[in-house]
Length: 146
Image (cartoon, rainbow, N blue to C red; front, side, top):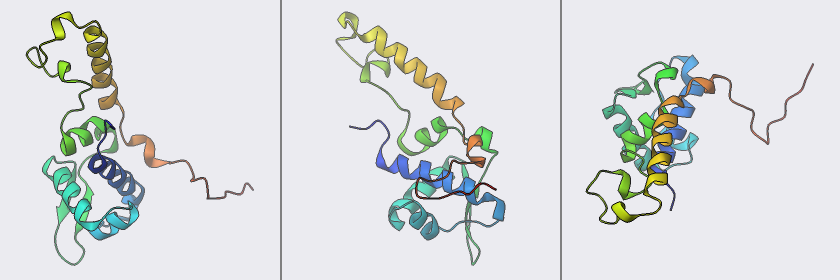
């Protein structure tokens, strides 16, 4: 089982695509995002509505409608996207709270799992989309040096 659900993966892809297209000043439609992210239109619509509800993207209707990023890239983190789409990322039920696991008081790995969870809670908010302004080239793209 993957910690990041498929729906969240599509959300991360959509934000990355929006970052790469933000210079053109135009909103991206749900169907364009679905095509660029290898998603169905229905799935992308669901994902984008969640992102809009969280204030990560803005939507507009009409002929030139679609979605644009709502904030600066350094303010959009992986934690924001994950929380908006699937809720907080928890490694195990024991990290959800003191009454979440009956075995926690005698569990030999509870402290290690809590430590790992704290690391995730520190790292995910620090991982933003600011670095995507200059993404690496894809393996099938060729670059020539002058």
